[in-house]
Image (cartoon, rainbow over all chains, first blue to last red; front, side, top):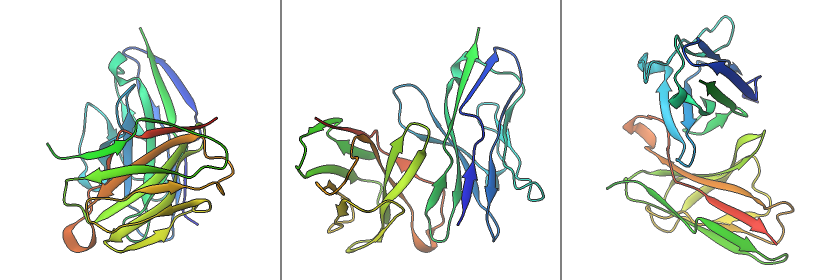
Length: 108
Length: 115
């Protein structure tokens, strides 16, 4: 079975510090991975897709097939980054398998 | 303004009752999905539909039922057989088939509480 693991339930950092939200996956084929974010009182929304190789709100994520990882990074955290973050893996068809999520708290 | 609308926002159910959660989209998406969100467990797939009049069970379909009579609508019924229905339910949609996949668009969710 495909699996997505986010090992940290909560990550707490100070404003201006670097952020790394971890995501590991297991998949037998060529993976397609996503990061979703859920800000307080807002709906879940797409943050970025690995195939786009884009940077959204200063966040980047690189697919590392050797380590089967897709960690989300930002060099300088901002208070408005505080949210729940989910890593997701596309299965056959268009189904997404989600990790358990990581709460990011940015302290001032 | 395109998007997904879930209703109601909050729903209370008595033991033994069936309840139906509504999900409507005007994005012209082929595929629709229902997930359940529980603290510490992430999102788990209940049912999904790739096309009208067709749907498949997800990982936790027991105690739930769906229909897909119209492209825009994908209602979820939580039956009395669902042992632990109190949760936050999310509906999503996406392009299907050969039109490319860009991830999901999510609704704002329905919080169901059994009283």
